Image (cartoon, rainbow, N blue to C red; front, side, top):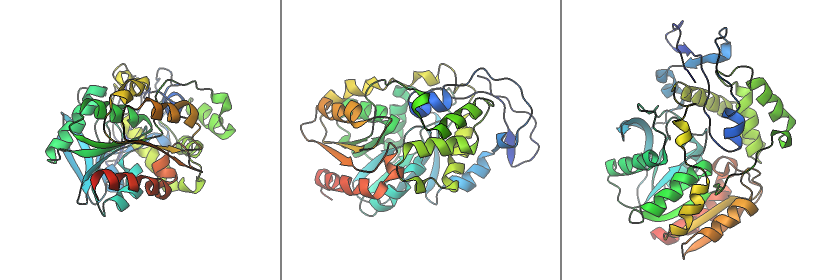
Length: 340
């Protein structure tokens, strides 16, 4: 994939040509795995990408900070006091995925969250390194910078890979782990089984491999939540802007992004984890179903202290779909392992 910048016509926007990311899973295979090699095409109004200055004005939070961690630009938020909790977002999301949880958790805990490069307002990686080893180095670097020795690590969806790997390889730093609707194995994907509106959005999206229109992300979001009211125009625009921003890295669609470790890595790491573990699951998840991922993840866990909690009427994107009900099931675990 090539990403080229023609002359800017307006100081607040950029116009992009190029390809798209390739990763795994529903959003991965569907959203970014279908693109063919990019070709030059006439400018399209939806291919207008705001500059980083504009993006920060739109999506940074009052507590947002920017630093260089493990050699790459990182956007993070550190709020609250008490035992530390690190929140890792899923594919195509950002630290904003945790807004509801962070608001409530920060009343009693120190809550840290960041955009995993190239997502959100972080990155891109100057050396195009999106490997698992680098992602764990970012966690180490950020927590060292914040002078946090031990913490609870929480990961959802594709963040299950760095979450379980970190808990397995850094037992001295991990107080406990919460894994939310993670994948532990490869899984088949059949677009024909998806809602017709999503199939149509994916077909339209293939006609312009340089960017994604808002309706594409609207359908992706709707397919992954049970509470459709959560998919607001503001959220759709946020996902559109932030995911199109990631396309600025010319290596995102090449081999470097394929360095992302297969989901099966979590199945290898779970038996090695000794920290208290909560497996939290949106029961109506159609992407990583309970019977093929949730229950096997619980069974594979090597923790003596482990719990499986189900959240009814909740889909794959738990922190977005049912934040209050999910947190209600998580708090007793956090209170018990942290003493708060």
